[in-house]
Amino acid sequence: MRGYFNYNSSAPLEPRMRDRILEWVDADPALLSGARVGASPAWLESARTTIAGGPGLEEYQIAFTSGATESNRLALEFLYHRYMGSGLTDASFLRNKVLIFALEHSSIYEQAKYLRNLGYDVLLIPCDPNGVADVDFIRDNAGTDTVLVSMMYASGEIGAVQPVEEVGSICEQFGIHFHCDASQIPGKYSPSWFGSRANTISLSGHKFGGLAGSGALLYRKQPPVALLFGEELNVRPGMPNRLGIQCMAQAWAWTQENLSQKLASMKTLRDLFERELRSKLPGISFIGQGQNRLANTSAILLSDVPPDRVMTHIAKNHQEVGFLCGKEGLHSPSRVLLELGKGTYDNSTALCISLGASTTSAEVSMLIDNLTYVLNGSNGKN
Picture 1 (cartoon, rainbow, N blue to C red):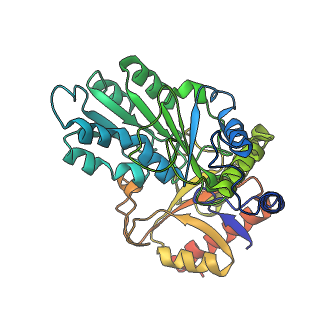
Picture 2 (picture 1 turned 120 degrees about the vertical axis):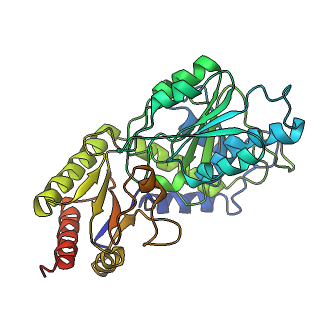
Picture 3 (picture 1 turned 90 degrees about the vertical axis):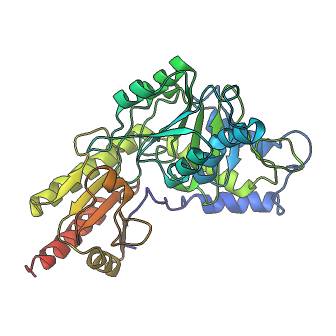
């Protein structure tokens, strides 16, 4: 492949990981190593320390999952448990308001309708045209009657970094459970974990160079409620995914190496991409340009350019980008763009270009040439 620009969807497995995987398999072919014998095995404790032992995460404990989708559900599980355990009554539901950010991942966003069916008062937190959450809306609606605020740390579709520290402060003031999906953060932004004061944080290993099928839920103050049953007494009972967990921990450690330098390099390359593309395509639109964004992310709108034409040409040149569209396919509107008021363009294309630490300027130049060719061709210039 001559250029992979879809890191926010899934980052390629770290090349160095192949040798580590062989080491782990050779050392323990069954990949068990005492996982079911009383205390946690050394490899599991090492993985926990690697991830939850970093600056700002020291007071968190960690439950390993299959990814951020499961972690997001696990973080909100207590809302369902309250209902099933007590029923919806005035005595047990002094707090019944839930605030969910409108741009949340579908694993959280789509829980809103089910929570409403259980009697929760669910409000969607709106955002501005750049995708930044409306903190004033949270201030006006969060209070002693609020049980949960859920807001991602950053959007993988458009790169917008959210005001999580302000939101965390509001939640602390009223004793509200604050959940933060931070799956897009590792390797793309330098976060203030302590500043967010989130009660629960979701991570996904394949977003930063680990194996797909591995993730984590970090939690503080009290463990999440899980309606799962098994032989173990853990938050998430069952056999741990040793290979996935170790790969995730190793990828986390590698991601932290020279992070400031990597972020600066990706930001420089992203800004160069946007300048060069705008100089060749003056009518192009960028989402959130000039705002606080992930260092690697650029979201662009190509008016009057069919998405299938873009996909065909990009694939023919052995490149991959992210398309902002709905679940029904390329020609269906993206929920994120609809929330931004930018999802009604007929026969147009919205792209998420997300770089990695190993992306080269030559690859970016080739992408610029390909996008320029597609747009000029759609306008009859080729």
